[in-house]
Image (tube, rainbow, N blue to C red; front, side, top):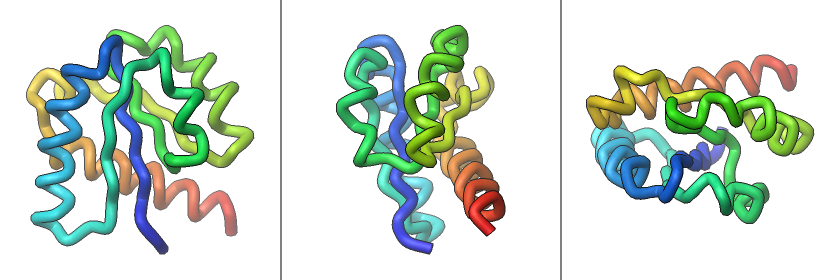
Length: 110
């Protein structure tokens, strides 16, 4: 398995930016090959070729069907970041969620 490319999205990308920073630190500490970026939900479509997993802030859960429609045909897994992970800026929680989604994606490809 290569690098897991994760994009976090929220309204303006600020709060997810802090969470992405914590997640990068957690991935590095655990020696997990993962890139984690944060962007505004308005530019997600510009990053389709640069992500394997899209994690959406809990306040954008209502946009999940739209994101899945855009991403899943390209093999990009999409999920909502649980409120407890988002509110606590829990980088380890983001890394664990991304790993689970990546593993589920690999299982589905077999």
